[in-house]
Length: 294
Image (cartoon, rainbow, N blue to C red; front, side):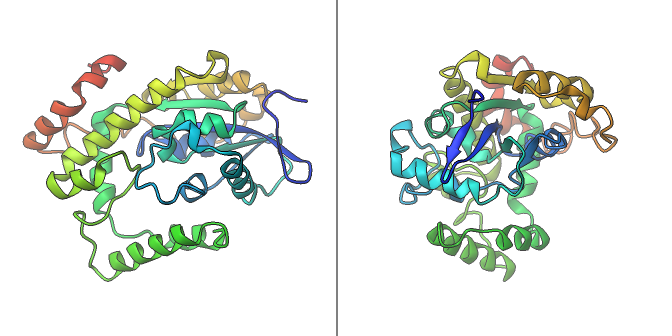
């Protein structure tokens, strides 16, 4: 059996590639680019509702590995299989909330490959600020809804629908709803703090939980890269990723990567006010130093 092969249901099998990264780190860009390979299929959406199956009552996304019971694992495997449409042997998935629970995801897929995407927290926080306040993307929502396994995650679907309708009607209030990975205590922070603080904490916790959890997974199953490096040399990094997961690098040689650029690198500081920057840096300076960004 190929290393990492996961057997699901009636002999169906695939090798999972779990892309870990904080929200607004460029995970969608990296996932879609990696999935240009003929041997790699992608789950086209974040599927936190699948990863939360069996743990819906927990009010945050920091699921411990012991919560991945055999029944929970079975449900998640079945849910992810719903999005597998081809016979490609590898399947890449990039739910950003997994940045808070890599040890849980590793219990679900103990032989998966992990790709950890890191991005400058200043750019991430600024982008997150805009995303929290953005109106619903109806084209994306309808496409995602059309593939939603509602019979497997009805409760999540109901809550998501109510929140989306409130946004549509103009009742959206960041003090009563959240966007992105739900770290422990996010609801209190949303009510008591400004949005810059919440976005900064969201990135910090995502980074810290990812680094801590991925250290517990073997180095031979974890590949780490920076967004800033990838957008400068996408072909070079795709070659490294292909080597890491054991597929032919040549599949990427003819890929059109002209849409990938470094135009969004370093915008975070200039796009926020000095007050917002001070709040941001009071929270994220330590992990930025740890990662070598400052």
